[in-house]
Length: 620
Image (cartoon, rainbow, N blue to C red; front, side):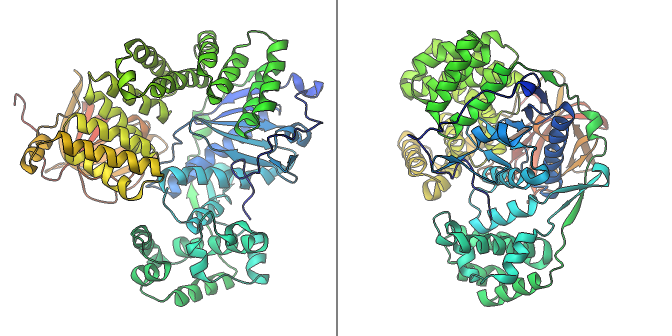
């Protein structure tokens, strides 16, 4: 059964715990530490060794996901902070509330947000926290890469990957082991019809009601395990099933069309698979040198600084009154504490009091010039101030655009992987109207790294319209009009399409000419480019190698991380997510690199172009 998360809890607005206090046991007060791994910030009152083990565990899990899902984007679009409590007593005031009371028997939870993700956990129950947080981390990843996946697949994948267990001293990991609670459910419970399982969404009774909820999770896990791990032929048919469901086909018709059988036959197959009780996971090889490649410097932080992280846990659980009392108490004890100012500023901005919050965030950013989280929060607040003005007024607010642009540049320098910051840099460039090429490059990168954020698609479409690339804009907006996640998204896409049609007198020939004249990414002095077919991404302990084949040879371009390479799409249709392994389709690319193509070439950019595109000759 999936543990309740902060997103699903009943909000307690009026009832406050009489026993709540931010006071931490004096023996632990001096023990708060913070360390940074490559992809996480870990803060806690546990020992340095324990915090390092937490960082290593989640970093290993992320690497395992990258190797198990080679076509998925594994980078989270926003930072992830892990708050670790040494004792259950320290954790209890920050547990999610149900009917005003802290949840019992919970060892950890995950909270996803637009600007940041948080994991909270206690070490008091040993390994018990990890299945929960790994399950929810997988959900957050799938929400970014497979936003339209059905509930059974979302939950089945999350359950499969939550069993991640490292083996051979961290050189490999087992994914997909059998959770005993699901076996017990399948053995003793009354199964649900397969069409009920595969049709369930977040409002379905089987997903929300006690006994049937447990059976739904067990069957979702078993069905996903069978289709993806237990039958290669069926695994190849899953994408077609998802496509048919996206087209509006019923579960029964989609099963018949994709799997070539009746629903009852598929149900019989996966029930037989489950009755074997010998379901096996699969091993993934991990980089044995990854720990030696990290520089994990732990720093002792004052209790007041540590408390600002716990205040943020309260704020993200929709407990603003408790959060405000707690931050007031911190600032009363330590006036001018930079993280305290930042947290109070966040609370004001969330409550719609930007005029009160911005000065606090600016002061915090000035006092903590190297803190990525504070810089990002300040930049976001400036962007939200611009957006509140409306597009036309914001475009004329040159001072506001300049402030936001400078703050975003600082935030990007401190954390280049923060996709929201990248997207908002593109948004500001769009409003400024002076460099649509830069706006397009930034927003295309944001769409690639976070395809589920449909707002980024809308912004990119606006850039394409400004560049009079109407075919490209239509390719982005058409799917949003038909199946945008929210009514607001669908309406904005419809409005943009109407504007493009009204503003344009372009014929199809003119549109084709515009595409042909589309300028590629400008070359820097030390860069070169060639055109070819993108074959695959090779991921290994020494970094990433991109394989691009020209008419007469294979050229290998290296990069430390795939995220360091600019991937820009000039085709009318979107490019499937690029990850380790071969792409899902043949892709013609213009590859930009530094160094010599025959050896030691450093990848800079891949620009995806139509199959008939020819690279302009120098001087033309």
